[in-house]
Length: 326
Image 1: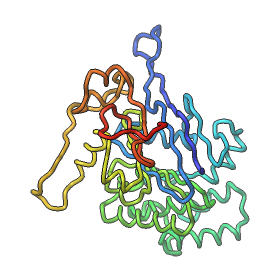
Image 2: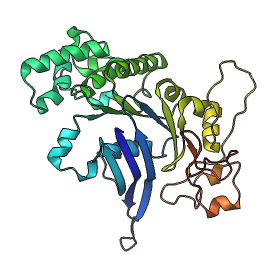
Image 3: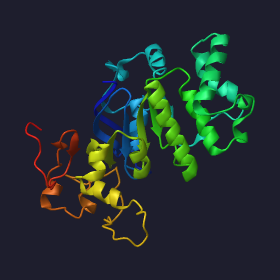
Image 4: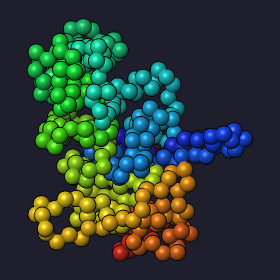
């Protein structure tokens, strides 16, 4: 197993304004998440804004320190690594952020941007030049782009530069945090196809964060649905899109636009807004918006049980029997 996350939580203290004597409240951005990611696999993490997806992604690569839990990469506990060991580990784990413009130093040329990770790793100049040429060909950029600056490129071209930079040290895992949400639809498809091609050629794994299920469907092998800091469903892609078990997943899928306007729709409309992670609902966190909610939902948090091979859901009213032993 390439990546294992066990009971990961990330809480942020928030002090009460004008009341320093009060105990700080805590934003439970991520609150007990476990996941596994295999080599040459894409795990799609989906949910609406504010559910904790990006916080989880940053905690996985230790850009944020977890409140509790464990992150193991190739069997090693990332939290237990020294600064030097963490630097070596980062060669194998890289991140692609949502906004490519914010990811690129405007004072550096494309050549400098792509070369920077290799210079930090103290590669020889000749080896850096050779690797830059390989990366340009890999992401579909021309050699004439090397001396240009980020502001001279389109959004899609900037994201190609970011991807080239992330791949410079041949990582085994790339965490993609909404990497196409800032791009036009046609450009999104190009970048998604590029990421899939890179995976086929290099065997890299992706933890892919998105709020768009259409994007998740195109790139992922497995899907995890996150709601208010918790995982509510996990399944292989085909199984998830054919038979979602959790009512939140069903609502997300029902919101995907239909190819034929006016066609019959089973749209599930959720009432209310996402509750605050400062004070999440008792029991099932989705109960305040769930059409199936009953009294027991407020009293007891549903366990994430397996109902089919690799298909887990956290709901008291799943219309299936869990697999024995789960």
